[in-house]
Length: 193
Image (cartoon, rainbow, N blue to C red; front, top):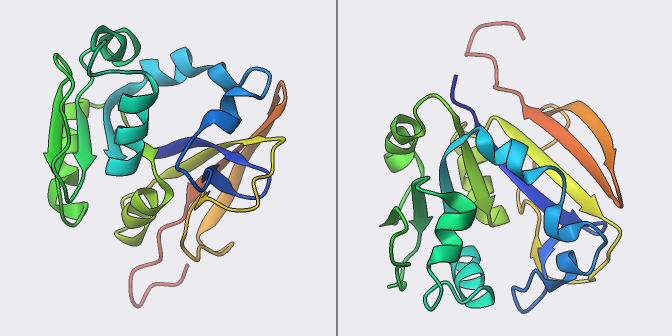
């Protein structure tokens, strides 16, 4: 069964990126380049969704326009939807769909493309929040790094209380603490939870 997962790394004070939208802080942490076991995680991914800011950072940070083979090396032919309101430069050879609007309007297409495997919401936090708002996010998997930034892009800029999140797993991964939460679905009207 296809699950929609928000899998990311965050600082101890809850930021995904610094105030310049950079993830450089992550790569300064021992093991940060391989936070967790990415290859194992990605083997279960059939499709990805990312926001424009995340896409732009990845493209710029790794010069993917000049070196598009890096994208295929990392993600193969896994289809990726990029949610944006502006024109972005595509990566040659990457299976990309640039889209806009409510995540519910294209989620079915992403599920179909995933072919029974998981959907990875790469980032950012607001995009993951949009999936949560529409009841389309199944899990949040966060690798917490021993870093504080004081400001930046928040992990999940939504109010999700304990009634929404159930802790499923806690694991130490080198300098990271991995937390896995399942999102609880509200009980249908007239039914006791």
